[in-house]
Structures are given as structure tokens and as C-alpha cells.
Figure 1: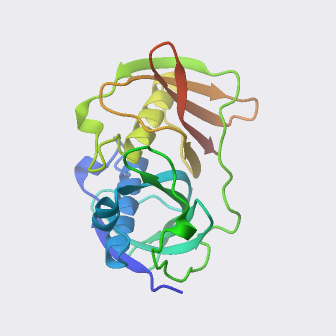
Figure 2 (figure 1 turned 90 degrees about the vertical axis):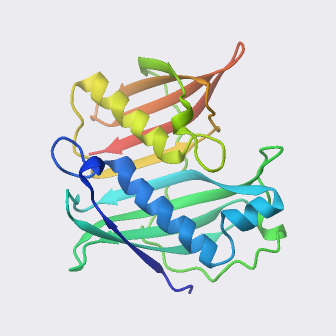
Figure 3 (figure 1 turned 60 degrees about the vertical axis):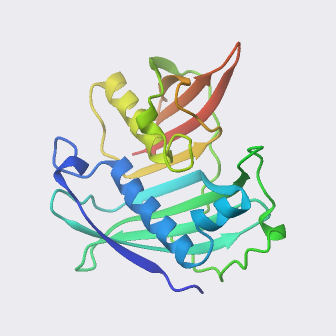
Length: 244
């Protein structure tokens, strides 16, 4: 097993919702930073992949909350590689307080894309010297989500340049922020999040036209779909589900 990496993050005022608790997309930023630093440490980070003409992209993630940190709290994020297949490399996370109180567990799946073609690479053929895998933080591997019928349109906008990250596309945390904003706009409030899962289906870039849609099923399960509009076409880019 590869030794987990631990990073400490202080919850700042600008990281919080009006109730003083940290935003879900901010927790994702903490995890993303910890993952990026660990990948660099292992020789598999953005610099090495950029040299080869590739990039990491997040394709699936599930977060299970047991507590939510607030303003002034310190969050220790532990992360480690947790397995891989032909196209997917998995990475898990546990977030806790300095006293050992667990805040969350998360499981994530990543692909390596070719920067020129946007096509996924076969990880097993890339001579990456992948590290040994650690245990799963979440027992059941989260399946990829698919859009369903019955969404209600909530809003539409053009993607701003400020949403673009180091890889030249919209950062994965922005999709989550947009989705939760859509839930709040649709319901008039944002329900407590105990478990949230999301799947990425297409890259989004500055200037793309985006539509957000929300669905609430008979059991109260919330689902958000983000679509991007092209010339005469609509592409599903992202799906999120909140499980109460």
C-alpha cells in the first residue's frame, strides 16, 4: 500500500455558506489539491502528464458526510490511490479534524486523456509505474450516473473565463457549485447533504452555453443535469444526485 498523504486546510470565511458551514465545492477543492500534490509526489502529477501530452480528469465521485466543518475549523485530508483498471485510476479520501473526528469519506475515479484528441488512454499501457493500491474508503464502488427523464429547466448561462483551470477547461468543482446553485434556485433552499454523488460526461470550456436542470423524484431524491449546447446539438456534461 502507498503511504497516504495528509494535507491541512483551514476553513476560511469565504469558504462558508450563510450558516457558517463549509461549501461542498470547497471540500472538493481541498480534496483536489491534496490529490494533485500526492500525484506530483508520486511522479504522476500534472507536470509529468503535461510533458507527455496528457491530463488527468475526474469522471466520477461520491462523498459521504458524517459531519460538516465550519468557519475556523481545520480539516485534515488524507488521500491515497485505491486501485486501477484499463481506463480508470481510483483515489480515495478521508477528511477529519485534528482531534480525529471524521467529517467525510470520498471515492473518486479518474481518467487520463490525450490533450490533443480528448480521448482516454489505456492506463495499463502507459508505463506509469503506478503505486500499490490502498484500501477503499467506501465499501461499494459508486456506479456512474446517467441522466433520467423529468428534469425541470432552472437556468442557462455562458461559461465565464474565471471557471477555467490549469488544464484549460472548466474545473470539476465548478460543476458542483453550479448544480447546488440550481438546487437552491429550484427549491428556495439547499437541503442538508449527507451523501452526494456526481458523474462527469463531457469537458466544458469558457464561452460554452450551459443549461442547468433539476429533478425531484417521489422519494425526495434530488438530481441535477448540466447540459452544454453546441451548434445544433445538446450534450449532457454532468449529473449530480443528493441522497438524503
